[in-house]
Image (cartoon, rainbow, N blue to C red; front, side, top):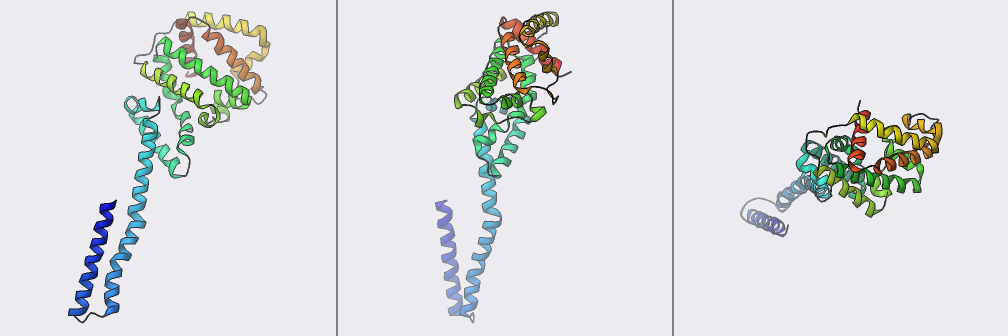
Length: 268
């Protein structure tokens, strides 16, 4: 920056010297010399403020977006594992930063873009990685439910009432824990998908539902119709927490198998 300023000042000093020489040695009048001197200055300013400065600002904002994601656990892995998604995420984050959003808040708004890739990785991930990720998700459900059951519902069913920004809603420590769990899942989910033991999954689910029915009764059926306006969203969140907690109480192999089966069923 300093070198550019020095070159610019030197150029205008040289131009001023040339104008002075022209005024003294030719018929060029003083006012004509001033115009000759000021014209490049005006053109340079127009060029700077209309193109150079905005272009530099846009480049800086894009670099800020890339650097923001590149240092975040989970997101940074996508740069090599999911380059197409990474490009979309950096473009969207750049757009939000240019619109004036704070980087941390803007990053939190990208969470919904990861749902598809997370579901894919749950189908491929190791048992330990899958169980760990869902365990943290249950922690998030509990935390959101304590703040407001409506937030928990939006977290569970973003397609019904819109998602939430976890970065601005949950504690920094829990957000860090979720990011670490996501990165662990991404790093431990090579293709192909894990084999499903459907009979075992069905048996485990029936036993869990049977136990939950003793507590919730017919209300448990609301888990199958979250978009229904008559649904008690507060109870739906609590039932979901109970359901996932019961699944996580199973041995890791069976818990991961049932979780994968549930993901597969939602995609059908």
